[in-house]
Image (cartoon, rainbow, N blue to C red; front, side, top):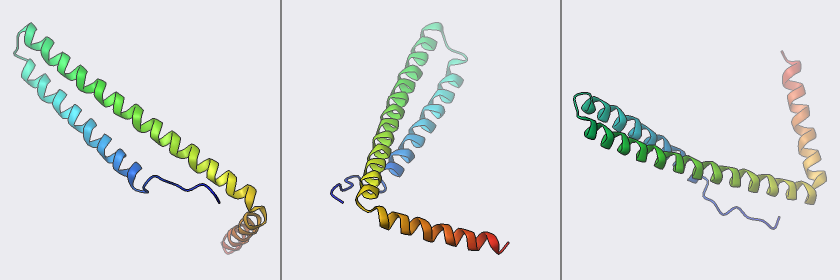
Length: 110
């Protein structure tokens, strides 16, 4: 196989955890700002709304980036798998047959 994976295995998990943390921060900030704005003037309310909008826009941008990275990673894995299957058809067929036999044995025991 000529293609090698360059991304670290934990990078997608780390990105997901970072996004979850960021989204929780946005929600917490929005909740805090809404509580503060309850007794505010129109100008303070507009400023708070603008701040929340900026945080949400940033969160959307990060989610889109993570989605694009995940899509690229999935395409890469699919391409590598396709290449491996084309280079080793008999090995893949043998592994598939072995897994099918194992599943058949496990199902027949029930």
